[in-house]
Length: 541
Image (cartoon, rainbow, N blue to C red):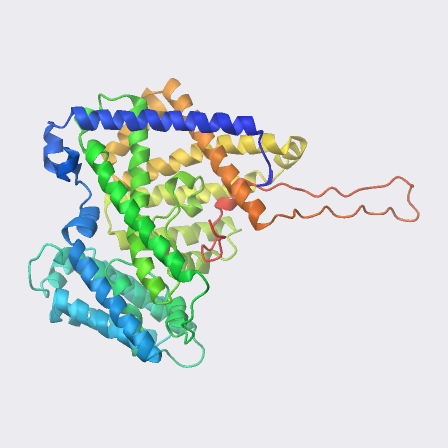
């Protein structure tokens, strides 16, 4: 029923034991395969020499991680350190010009790394979308922005624009597409916010300051223009008590996580193993399913660390950047499934919530979600895998709304009122278990490969039925209940005093003397939490 419904403590102990044993078993299997199959042909291509004192090779299958924290680590640290240094000097000497200094340093860094042709290309897109924003027609801003974004996702426009940029260093393609893609999204945010402004227009200088803020320029996250504009122009540069301590702790935590992940890469090759289909066909069902889960958890860790490093720098600049994504382990509703909270905030503000309204109408919700995943498809780049991923997640999001509405009708409401709160929580946990694995399978498809996702689904639902299916679902059910317990504890911390029940309603003067008491409904459908919400308003995790 409510999130404050508790379960017996011994039951939670059992769930913890089951979950720990399952995780240890899967971890041990991945370690054994990584150790005994080091001579496999697949391993030779992505498992390379690592830290010599470990005596083991390192999994280098994730090009993005290796780029950030190995190959171009010194370049990235140098650029961000220069930004922090210039920002600090400006904040001490001329804090009113800090946004201009951020812009100047960002443009200089872009020019130094990519050349004048790339800088000119970026400026041309900024001028184009700024000019369109002056018309103050939202549909025209959408059309121009999405069309421009599509030119970086489809041929022959990609090759034509890439031809303007000279040089062939290894990082150039990544910087090219990252800077262009995020620039278009920022320009669209500026244009749409300019349409909402009643008195006049924002200047093009505000757009340039917004777009060329270096920590966000190449790799994100995206902060919507309205938030950036307010925060970067805030004259108050004083910090809250203990804020610098928290920033320092955050930086140390990210450094520790980077080190731990690098160590794990030497002992568990869970990024390389999914690419070896011959090996996967001969492993156990449980090991395969655990491998899929580990792959998703790692992707969340990567996103949290990469965005966390950038967020630490931006917090030094007195900004409040988008928070890291919510861990896949904590997800059992589609509305919270996102690996980039900045993009999610952008989509919620300009598409999802704008079209969906209060998200209580099935048709409006369907239109809003279709448009949202349509924009996401353009952002990710049209391909069959992206189309399938978008369709499945769009269906899952709408199915949650349909289910929530269905279970708010009779006789389900009366049935739930007749059972205990703890039993209601258990029933919801069973339903959320299937939802959890639906989310996992959909995102394995996007983050790994279609063949790997098909193999996992086949083993979990068909070949492994009923033993594997029931076992995995039971372990997942234990996980869901532990997540709900964490949410319940957090809710009690946030609101320690429960809402008192209403006072008894006195009978009318001409009615019999029997006292009538109004019993409040405590029903809270967990699926309702899956209905679209503005993540800007969601409570802290």
